[in-house]
Image (cartoon, rainbow, N blue to C red; front, side, top):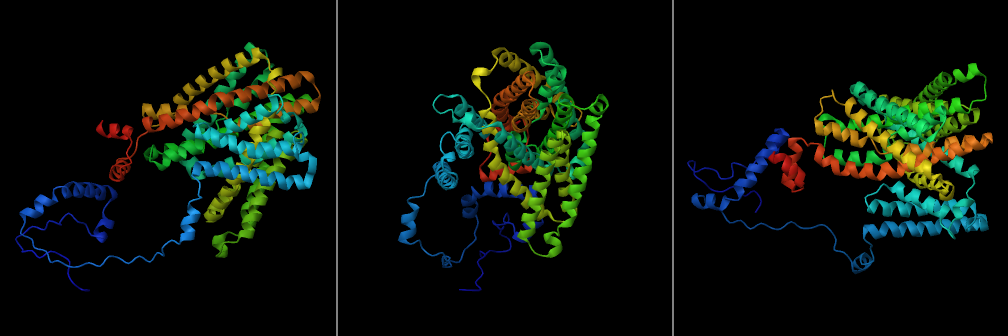
Length: 555
């Protein structure tokens, strides 16, 4: 049967009813939009194909067609039997977390003994790590950020009677965990910066990163000073500790919107992703300067020079270490093959430099320099790798730091929750603090809207920018307890009380803005952002168009 022409027999005068069919070679040369239009018209005409074919005199030759032979082997009875025990994804994730937790706990128990039982430090750490994963997962099922469940777990095991074993976690253990988590957060932020995007949208990104953060921190600082009675420097510490937007909350949702095509025509997801990391840099750097002034024991001249000196030290150290790690290792493109040993060493060098910067400068009393060094070194390293064409190496390192963050995230938020003692909280500070935070969020919303006014965006898109710029979580959990740690080292009781109140406000802003902010981004994205016409036509073809998109098309 090979070689037989499958086309219909027809006369020259008869129209070809298959004229709408497009060859693959011709289709590949057409623009995407014209192909989609042709597909739509073809599918519409196919509905009336019976009438058209009945009216034509075309005759067809009946040709037996052999069905394709499947090369897949049939499943064995054993395979079908095993599949009956497979769990749904929702149950599987929880089940694996519990099994893994049990295995790790048993393994650690054989090493440390009674310290891995309730009342031991190791038990608290293991419980926060794996219990936080489970509570975070169930929080995500309720459309809440996972860190809310992790934070809630820490608060519960510190304040609920009979299970309050969180009190056995000393600050000497909690502080290094937070500092290591901060190093991972800052390194991820530095690796997430895209130099090309920063240069392309430099003025818009700069406005978004600087003005909303500084304005909100200043307003909150003034309110906290006059309403709650904080000293000026402590008021600014509160302001900059709660001002940074949380990439851990908005980035996953923005990436989902980007994959669905929302806002990509004007580069809105790209701008938000770039500006979020830069926003963190501004807030953390200014927070470090305020911390340096507050706890400085140096002379007045050195205290005045503390801020500029920290910036200079952080920039120099970051540039030198970033250039070193970006140059010393050969890329997979240059060597011609993927060297996983080099990849692991790159991870250790980048992570080791970040951890050394944060811990080392904190020990020397220049915590702001450590923060800047960590950010700048990872950003410089990423720029060198991209310029050398080592994009695959760069993406691998980013994936590794994403994995590290999944390990540190439940520990960080769980440890923060363990430091909140409900009985010792000042109700007036909590109530007045919530009012100050709400006013600060409103001011931030308005400032963000103003900053994107003259940027070619529509009213709905400017509102979405303002909504996406409100959630707080990650940076607050990392730097919120730093003032308390330094106050405990100084031994000043008044400073310890102020440090605890700063931590309380940081936790409150997480609980207030993270769930509401994420929910607002989820609901507002499809309603305020638009899709390109090409993407909407593709959605029509595959039948995945939402009701909101259908209304947009009709309008």
